[in-house]
Length: 80
Image 1 (cartoon, rainbow, N blue to C red):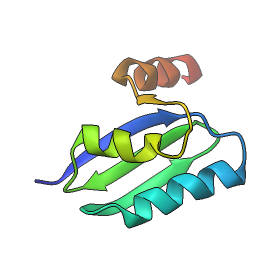
Image 2: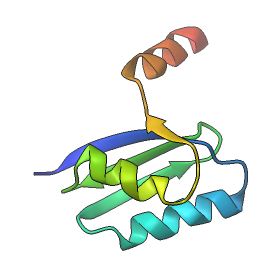
Image 3: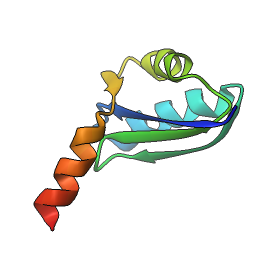
Image 4: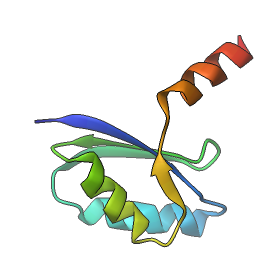
């Protein structure tokens, strides 16, 4: 079953982005992913589980946590 997993990942440079791209590119079940260094946000779509994506991205050594839905809403409200 296809689903979307959104993570907050501590990325400070293009090398960090490259590390995340590498591990997600090798992950089974991933249909697509987007890495946004400015937002510190990684969005993964595919036949994956949140825990599997979390563990895979954590292998980069970057601080990784699940993106809280309220953060997205707060940001949208603040910029409106």
